[in-house]
Structure formats: C-alpha cells, structure tokens
Amino acid sequence: MNKQEYLNQIAATIAQGPYRDDWQSLGAFEVPAWYKQAKFGIFIHWGVYAVPAFGSEWYPRNMYIQGSKEYEHHIATYGEHKNFGYKDFIPMFQAEKFNAEEWADLFQRSGAKYVMPVAEHHDGFQMYKSAISRFNAYEMGPRRDLLNEMKTAFEQKDLTFCVSSHRAEHWFFLSHGKEFESDIHEPLACGDLYWPSMPEPDHHNLYESPPTDEYMEDWLIRCCELIDNYEPKVLYFDWWIQHASFKPYLKKLAAYYYNKSAELGFEGIINYKHDAYMLGSAVPDVERGQFAELKPYYWQTDTAVARNSWSYTPNNDYKSPLELIQDLVDIVSKNGNLLLNVGPKADGTIPQEDQDILLAIGGWLETNGEAIYDTSYWRTYGEGPTKAVEGQFTDGKSKIFTPQDIRFTVKGSSLYATVLVYPEDGEVKITSLKEKSHDFQGIIQQIEVLGFEEQPVWERTAEALVVKTNDVRSSYPVVLKITVD
Image (tube, rainbow, N blue to C red; front, side, top):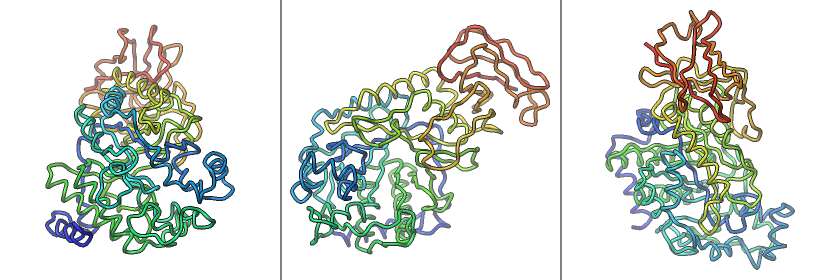
C-alpha cells in the first residue's frame, strides 16, 4: 500500500465512525474498566541507544552537540562523527540474549498488569517490522520483529500489550549533526534514518519550527501502522505532539484508533502530556511527577527505576523499592496509574538492579495488592504532613514520608488505609476516621492488617481512629483493611 492509499484508508475508517476527528466526538471517550483496575504498568526504553549506553537515551541527539559530554565521549571512544555516526551503532545492536518469555515472566512477577515497550524513540529507529522505513529491527541490527515477540510473550502471561511512539520529536532530534562535518547532511529523504533533521526549537514553544505536511503524514501513517499490525491497547505519546502543527493529525489519529479498536473488539486508550489532547478525549500523563491532590479524571504518571536515564547506562542512579511502592500507593489514592520504566541492555538482558526492584514491588503487591488493584478513590486521598510536589520532573529527590502519612483506597465494603511508614510503637492514628468525622460517619465492623496474623486493637475517639498492634513490623507500607457498614 502506497502513502496515498494508506491516507485514503485512514480517512475511510474515520468516516465510518463512530468517532469523528473533532473534539466533540472524541469527548465521548471513556476510560476502559481494565485500565482503571490495572493500576500498575511497565514501560520499556530499549533501542540502538543502549549500545553506547552513555548519558541517557538522548545520546543520539547529544553526541552531535559540540562540547557536550556525549560529543567528547563519542570522539574518544568511536572517532570523528563523519566516520562513525549514530547509524553505525545499528549493526552493534544485536539483542542476542533477548528472550521475550523471560521478560514476560519478570513483569508478571512484578505485579504489573500492562506493558508498554517503546516502538520508536526520538532516534527514528523502529523496533518492529515496518513498511515505512528500512531502518527497523526486522531489516537491520537484530533482524527480528522485537515488538511482535514481546506482544506474543506478554499476552501469553495475561499482560496487556501497549506501545509508545516518540516519533514526533524526530523532526529535530538529530539536527545538530548538520552544524559541523558529520554523517548527517543533505540530501535526506523521507524514510532515511536522519531525515529531516530540522532546526531544534524551544521544546515547549507551540509554534516554532513547524513540521511539514510530508512529515506529519509520515507520522500519522507510522502510528496507524502500529495500530493495524500490533493492536496495542494503549498508545502513548511524548510531549512534542503538543505543537500546534499536530492538532489536526492528533484528532485524525484518535478517531482512527478508537474506530479501529472498536472494530477489533477493544477500547483503545491514548496517553498524552500537557494539553496535547482535549481533556476527556484521552488519558493525561505526568512525566516523572504526579499530582498533589485527588483528581476527578483518570490519569497516569510515567517514571523510571533510575533518576538519571530512561535507558540502560552502567552508572544508573536507582530509586529504592520503598520509594516506588510509596509512590504507587500515593498515585492510586489520587485516581491514577503508575507506569514504571526499565532499561534493558543492548544484548536484550534486563539489568539485575532493575529486576531486583521489580521483584520487590511484586512481593509487596502479592500481599497487599487487594488495596491497589480494582480499587477506587475514597472521599479524600489521604492524610499526613508529606505532600507530593505538583507537576512533572519532580522525582529527582525522594519524599520523606512519616507514620502520619496514610493513603486511602476503597473496594466494596473494604476501606484500605495504607500506612506509608509503619510506626515502631505499632500505634496508628487515622484522623479522617475519628468520631463525627466529616469524611466518614459510618460503622466500622472489623480491622485487619494485610500480611499479618495479629488482630489489632482499635477504638474511635474524638481525635482519631486509633489502631494498635504489637508484632507488626515492616520496612514497607502496611495496609489496614477496614470493613465498614
């Protein structure tokens, strides 16, 4: 199918409905129940950038910025850019130890319910078989359809398969290579790895350096190819789709995806950042951050096990399992999901540090998952002195929670109060459940501590619900399951 035929197919699918490419129609979107029940997913940043494994997944951009640490590292390690450019890493990306079944087993044991590999990052290399460009993992490097192998293995483990596309930013991502003698130079044509390498704008300027219609049509077709060939249940986009030039194409993409997924028997979900999509037409995502308060709309945060990079580097600055479990609890209490990223090595193995973190989270969820999965928010998300800083890129520093920091979720007749730091003396005071509380005036029938045999002693006073235990000890959050009537 040539380009025009594909565009005609996209238009026909939109015309058939039920969704049209306008905000009023797309506003009929509703978040599917499975996504609200899942709460926890895995993100995977894996690509050619794992070969140099230096700095971050932005190595392909930064290696062409003169004077940067990546530029200096590249010359010292690989030589001048005119002789060894980013494209020359592709044959070194072999994925020789990649085993999708092993990944699926690990992710299932982590307690995650959906998995989202990056299908194409800003570098423009597709991790799947594609008719759009020969610069893909099926024709180069591993010479395998890595995305299809993941889809098959994940779905066999009942993990919902999703994908992300970071193609939008490719418009400018490699452009600095044109500023000196390198392997990035004209002529460049659609389908080339380095095409178009246009001047890099201010990343949050909504009008500067607008992509051409040719580029936007190529972007749309790449996205629709992913939908048609891999049927992802969630389609995630990075920030630059916020640019004004994308607006008509975003609506077309959403209408196509929602119509196509309905035809295939599922409800597709789009993750977006900032205000790229109209609120209510897709699910907003906060990168490396979260909301300070409960939100009336469903949302997601994406963050990584490492603070410094989304991809593998030998010196990753890892977060602790405790920090990530506390964040998961906090996010779920505020009506959100956590999408947690790992960065595999170029050979296809997942670093032991990443594995250890995922297994620790999975161990906690095995005991306490009923307070997370298939729950909803309560009248207040929680209580305590520690507040999350609102907004993106706020995870550079760990939050220091206290025994007074408690988060709530609810399911059926169970109200779950998760104590983010369990007190050494075993006494928990929940002020939201005090007598004559404006948050709760019902009847408490029973209180249990998930994962412990001890039956706590409790009473409601004018100041708080006071719960006392003698033998409960944990370095991780502890869940009090409160049966109410």
